[in-house]
Image: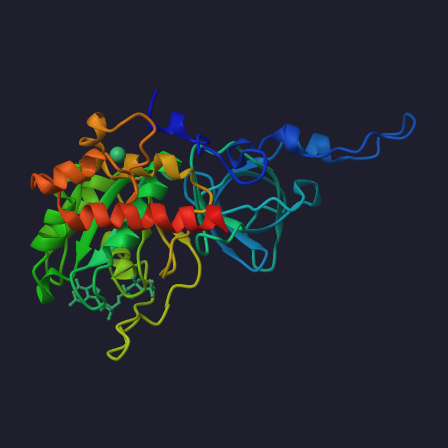
Length: 349
Ligand SMILES: Nc1nc2c(ncn2[C@@H]2O[C@H](COP(=O)(O)OP(=O)(O)OP(=O)(O)O)[C@@H](O)[C@H]2O)c(=O)[nH]1
Ligand SMILES: [Zn+2]
């Protein structure tokens, strides 16, 4: 079984709910007909639904591509899909006018089961979780060496989200032309997370990234201004993603990308650019699984007493021994424990 088998194993959730990873025909509510007269002519149309993929979503309008030549079709969701979110990356069935002609509107009547779901909550005590992207295999966590400053705790949160969703993480450190990437790269080296360094006029870095993403469906996430759109423009010539200047005062980008967009890579696969994020809430992830995303720390926890959460208050946690022996970077333990504490506070509220 591949990594995708982990999808849906998102652990304890604060309220019962159905897996988002299981949309299929049986989810479509069909009212029982009164008498013998068929109430709906929708069913026969479904069998002729054209397969497509959602590449952009904007205010209830879904841009989909169909066929080998990526014919672009604008669609709305059919009423029988209910309030279910349809997101970028979803594989859908379309009926109605799928010609893609100006002013035409097709209908999405089916959302195929998802192989992965990238979710976040706005912050850790927000129980409204948003599905950002469906069916992606790789999560590219983009962080700049400087301008804006790297935020390791945001990187750690994205790593947790990657493991939770069964996506393969990749760290992309950008702007190596304006700073030394070695500290950030070194910090994540013990995790064995594939890492690529890019910078202005660095053809080699982009080539490495292109190789890593070739044939895959990859999502770029990161703080606003780290250079995601710049990467997309380099990976997909002619894609023309708007690039925003980083505000020199706040170091923040101008949030030039407003929603996720999927673009086809020239040699196969897709890259999905997402708007810059400031936080990556993990209210939907079981805190006991956080350690999985900290492989460097997890390797040291064999000697922990049974039931050790590895949190700051644990009396005999092996992470403390490893720190004292100099085997672990205190900043890494700190980052993990802060993440854990942010969730414990929530649970204690
Ligand atoms: N020096 C340098 N500047 C870069 C590099 N990559 C991007 N930039 C600049 O950083 C700024 C932000 O780049 P974007 O690509 O818009 O960043 P983004 O991550 O897409 O930002 P949002 O759309 O807000 O999420 C722009 O001024 C880019 O020209 C790089 O490798 N080196
Ligand atoms: Zn422990």
